[in-house]
Structures are given as C-alpha cells and as structure tokens.
Amino acid sequence: MSIVLVGGMDRLGEKYHKEAKKQGMRLQIFSQADNNMAGKIKAADAVVIFTNKVSHQARNDAFNAAKKQGIPVFMHHACGVCTLRECLNCLSVMGELQKKLAI
Image (cartoon, rainbow, N blue to C red):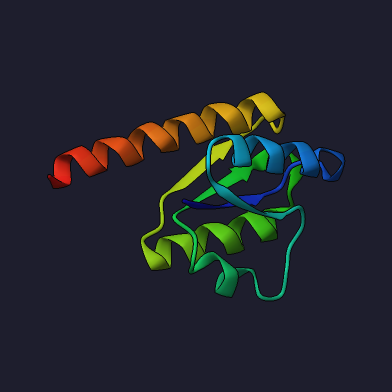
C-alpha cells in the first residue's frame, strides 16, 4: 500500500518511514507544498494530512488532488509518530476488510 503524508515535522521523517515500513507500506512525505504534489498523489492508495504542521495551500492542494482521483484522505491535527501509527493501523484494517468483501 502506498501512502502520501502531507505535513508533519522534518525531524521525524525517518521515524515516519520506519513506522510505515513496519506496517508493510510505502510512505512518501511532503512536509511543505510541492510543485508536482498532485501528480505524485495520483499513485497513492491514501493521503494523510497533518493539519497543524502544513500550510493551508499545501493542505488544499493535497486534499483537492486526492478527491479528484477518488483517493481517501485522513486529516489529523497532531503530527507525532503515534498518530501516524494509528492511521496506518486503520488503513491496514480497512484494506483487510476490503479484501474480505471482495471474496
């Protein structure tokens, strides 16, 4: 599963990646607005936005790009590793549920 994280703290980037790897997920982080963020979000399975550590413009760009592609968006005010862990756990459970329903 490929996850895009928008926001967060730069100093926690390595820990964010480790947490995603533990869950068997690929993580791409945008700690600030990026010119081609919309193009990079197209390949994601989900987008997580940490709203307290990102500009309104970056949040809006990520949200609109994800919604245009039908990609689920999860917004959280906190930006700690525990918050990401909880979100990834939720995504993992949702993925398993979708697999079971498809059978």
